[in-house]
Each structure stands twice: as C-alpha cells, then as structure tokens.
Length: 581
Image 1 (tube, rainbow, N blue to C red):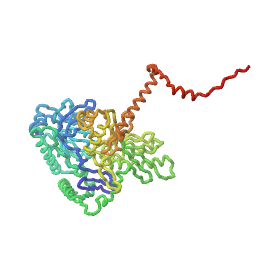
Image 2 (cartoon, rainbow, N blue to C red):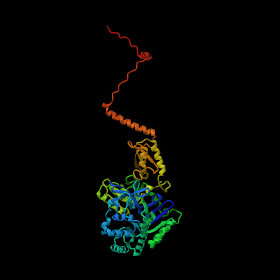
Image 3 (tube, one colour):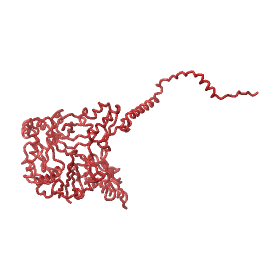
Image 4 (tube, helix red, strand yellow):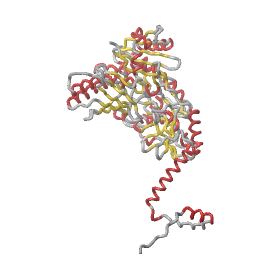
C-alpha cells in the first residue's frame, strides 16, 4: 500500500501523520511553543569559550545562546568572517577578492576539514545556523556550515563545488546531474543535488536554483550596514512545509489536509515543483476528524501509552528516564508448545518491528536500551541483531546499535533533531491529545523565592522539571536566576532535573540527607539541622573522651530542720540486737 501524509491544523497547533502500508509511521506536532527552528540562520555574537568542551557559546537571540562545537566549524570559516565584516556584503565580490589573495585548490578533502578555531574571538560577529533543537537544559546546537535547502537543490554560499546525493546510484544519472549543475552553478556558490532531483530536467533545477538565490539575496540585504548582532537573518519553512519539501514524491498517493489555507499553500507549492502530482493533494470535507476518517486515531493514541501490545500476546513497556529511554520486551500471555528458546526468539523477532516503529513514532533519541527476552545461543542473538539492523535501516534518522549481550540487552543511539512529542504532549482521560503547559515564569519564580526568603541559608537541592531547570539556569553564570538567588538568599543551590514533576512544580531537598523539606516550616527545618548537628557532636564526643573537660560537682546545700524531721519519719525503727550468751 502506498504512503500518505495527513495534516490536521487548528488555531493553536499543526499535527502531521505519515502513514506507510496502512500503519502510522511518523507523527509530529508543531505549536508556537515548539516551533521548528532547524535551518534558521543568525548573525550571532561569540560570548564565551569553553576549552574543556572544545566549544563556544554564541548569542543568537536576546535571551538565547547556542552551543557551537569546534567540529561544527566549516572549512570556509575565514571567508565567512570576512563576509560579515563588509558594509555591503556580496558573495561573488568576496570570493573574487579572496581568490586573488588566497589562491588554493578547491577539492573534496579541503571542504570536509574543520575550520580553524583560532580565528574566533570574544564579541566577534559570526554566521551560524541551528542544526539541533534545544533539549531540556541543553542549548541549541549550532554550525557555521550555512546552506539553503530547496526542493531539488541545496545552495551553499562562499563555496566552489558540486555534489550529488549518495542515494542516486545510477552512474549515468549522476553524470547528467553533475554536468547540469556545472552549467548553472553561479560563481561563489556550491550546489548539492538532492535525491528527488533524479530524473529532473535542467529547467526544473534552474527554477529551484533561482528561488534559492532570491532567498540568499534577502539575507545579504539584511546584512547591509553591518548590523549589530544578534540578528535573525533567515527563518526556514514550518514543519508541514518541510515535510512536503523533503519527503513528498511519487511514492505518496495522497496528501489529506483539513485546513483551507494549508491546502492552498501546499497545492501552490506542488504545482510549482511537481505539477504531475497535483491530484494527490485533497481537502477533507467530512464532519469527522481527519485522523478518524483516515482510520489512524487509535494508533495516534497509542503513541502516548507506556504499554504497546504485540500480536502474539506479548507487550512492550516504554519508559523515559533522565538519561535514556528504556524498552522492556515481555512474553505476556503467549502460549505455545515450543521450548523456551524458540518462544523467546519468536517474541523477540516479533517485537523488533514494533520497537522500530515506536522509536520513529515517538521520535525517541539519545540512548535507547532494550531488554529482550534472554537467548541462550549466539546464533539466535545474531538473528535478532540482523533483524534489528534491517528495521533501523528504514529510519530517516541515523541510528547505531551494539550487538545483544548475554543478558539480552541491546543499546541504540539515535540522532536527536527535535524534542520527542511525548515530552511536550499527553493523552487526557477523554483520549484527547493535550499540550503540557509550559511553566509560568512569574508564578514559579515567586513560589521559589518565597520559600528561599522564609528559610535560612544553607545547601539545598532544587528539584524541577527539565524545562524549568533550563529556564532557571538560562544565560551566563553571573546573570542566571540561580546565581541571583544564591547571592540574595545566601543559599547554595544545586538544580536537579526530574521528569516526574510538572513544569510548574518544585521540591527542595536537604543537601546532606536528601530528605524533602519543601513542606516543612522554617522552624522544623532549623530543628532538623540542629538535631543533625547535635548528633554529629555526640558521635564526635564519644570518639574523643580523653579531651573532655572534668566536671566539678557542685557543693550540696545544708538541709533545713523540716527536711531532717521528714527524713527521720521515713526511716524504719530498728529493733535492738540481742547477743546470744
């Protein structure tokens, strides 16, 4: 069955589903709080260098910094730094002047090496683009490898080369595309032919190139007059448009849209770049939801469930942690006459297809650990590894995995491009997908400051949601909210991330005992601190008895006459003893 793209648009967010062979393969949600920023280009300002990280932090917005690793410096870094210094920058002029003063051969090896980090200086202007979305407390990942992506081509300014997508394997087609690009490539720019360029004529490629050059001229216009950074120079297309641009091809039989504005926009784009596919774009007119009409609503709800059922009766348990995602394979109610080894192999192989599908659906990234059912024989473990490699190979995002261990553990690393949809949304009791509300900065700041003001200084752990942790530690060390609290309230604060808390919740823990002291009054907190101090003192005094001072007993007072009479009355009368004759 062919592929489909189904788009649901509301006033607050856009949801995109990609269906392959009747099953939901990918699902994305874009909202104003989680807008796609990969591909955006900025004129940034270098703030600080971190030699231990081999990286620099670059200001790209008034309240945001990006992480620029030295391995993400492009080979044309020196040309870019010269370009941004110009009062009226033009690629062709800068490249001509550069070629005259710095003659060097342009070949593949030269453009693949890293840029020289010694060229960077604090407060320096620099062109950067976002390659990875911010994640929890991590800053967005930046690169100086500037490019503009079109339908068929990718335009690279300040470069002099042409390249063909590796997925185009036909030698004659590669030679044809290379000759076309050599003919149409403007001076000072590099070109890369994308996979969908296969079979396209020179007119289609030239039209796409002109579209990209027009966008680059707008960037040059924004740089006129040497503006002060940070400046946003270019905003890439939204998530729905990027999926249509990057994925839509002859393999898709339908694009189903339920919004008139989105429908017209997609039709206009398809009509310009692939008019033969215009009939595949259809508008949903029914009263039912577009996902219900397409028969995938139940599969979408499954994305937000921690348990996924397998056809044979087994199940998958998917749990996120602070460091990784964990997937547990259970045989469940599977019944068979096979021995344990055969049963375990069958359930593991059946689970692999579902695991690969859930990883793509939930957009899981980073470290993923899978606990398969134990297998005794190495040959069976190899079958599981081969099947997993085949399924992960269908993923558009780069994945790597290690062989299964003797305990049935498999480790997978998946490249992170954006935040997982399960981190930003949840399923309500009425099976409606709701966005997890972001924390109100004023509200949670007032609550934390009220607690710190009431309690005396000391060392504490502040446990908050990862999004809240990123907000508290945002900015330079001296300017962050955490540093302000430490100076103002005399507390030593260590911020701890916890996904179990909602973005508007926080907990304070004692730094020594790690006991929760959030709901304790200031008096109880002081009592606990004093009791710990006294217990520490007692334990120390027992160990140091020789050094204790000798306590001199006080002199007893002389008893009064009344006390003497009362003591005599209490004494029993003793009988006189008689000695035997």
